[in-house]
Image 1 (cartoon, one colour):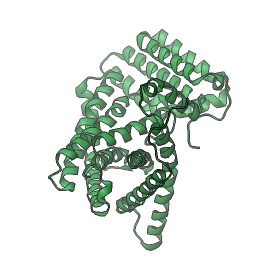
Image 2 (tube, helix red, strand yellow; image 1 turned 120 degrees about the horizontal axis):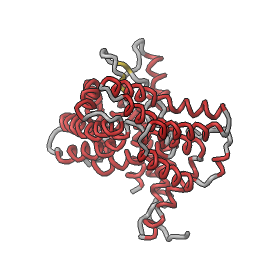
Image 3 (cartoon, one colour; image 1 turned 90 degrees about the vertical axis):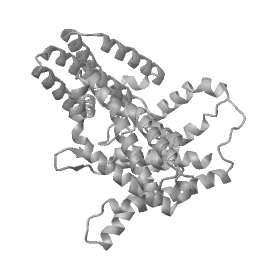
Image 4 (cartoon, rainbow over the protein chains, first blue to last red; image 1 turned 60 degrees about the vertical axis):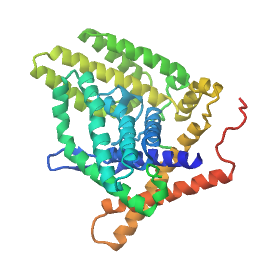
Length: 181
Length: 205
C-alpha cells in the first residue's frame, strides 16, 4: 500500500517535472513538450489503474492551483480553456496504455510499451482532445483534427522514448515496473 | 512554495474556499447560457471589474495568467471570420476569456492548503462510508515534496554530465534520473512502513 502510493505520487511529480523540460521545436515549427511522455510512462510503468490514479493526482494538483502543466500553467482556468479535452483524456490515455501493457504480458517490454504508448497516449488521448477543441472553439471535428495533425510526429518520438525508458527501467529495476510485476 | 496564489491581499482572500467554488460553478454555467455580443462584453467587463478592485497590479498579474488564451482567441475569431460568421467567433472568444479569467481569480485568491482542505471535506461522505481517504491527503503532500526533489536530482545529474562530456545533456539522462527517483520513492515507502504505514486507523474526527 505505502509502496503503491509513493510510486503513484512519484509519477504524478514526474509528469510535472517533464512539463518543465524546455520544449524543443520540430522542423515544422511545432513546439513539443515532454509532458505527454509522462502520461505514457504512467501507463507503461505503473499499469492501468495506478497509472490513471497518478494522472488524476497530477490533474487534481493542477486544479488546486499548482503551475504544473507544461509552460507553468495551472489553476482552475485551464479546465475552462480550449485544451480541456486533452486534460480529460490524460487519465483515460494512461489507463488504456497501462491496460494494453498488462494485456501484452507475453510480449517483450519494448515492443509492448511502444504499441501501448501509441494507442493509449496518442490515439485515445486525441479523441477527447479533438472533441474538446471542436466544442470549445466551435470548429467541426475534421477541422480540429487537421489542426492537431502537426503534433503527431512529436508524439511518435515521445512514444519511442517512453518505450525505451520503460524497457531499460525493466532491466534495471524489474520490481518497480508494476505493469509487469 | 510554488503556487499561483497572488501575494497581493484582496477582499476575496477572506471568502471561504467552498463559497468561491460554488459561485464559480454558477457563474460558469451562466456564461455558457449567454449568447449575444453585448451580454458577453458585459460579462468580460464584470470580470475585469472584479480584477480591478484589488488594484492595477493585481489586474496585471491576472492578465499574465491569461497569456496562453490569446492564441486561441486569435484562432477562433480568425476562423469564424474566414467562414463568414465573425459574430459567433467573437462571442466564443469573449466567453473563453471570461470563463478562464474567473477561474483564475479563484486560484489567485485561495490558498493551496484551503483548497486541499475543501477536497478532504468533500470526501467526508466517502470517509463515513468506510473508505480510507488519508492516503489521498498523504499523496498530495508527497507530490508537492517530490517535484523540487526530482528537479534537484536532475540538476545534479546534468551538472555531472556537463563536467565530463563536451556534448549537451539530452535524453540519455532520462534513465538515470528515473532510477534515482524510483529508488528514492522505494526508500520513502520503506520508511513509511517502518513507522506504522497508512493502513486504516480508528476514525477520530
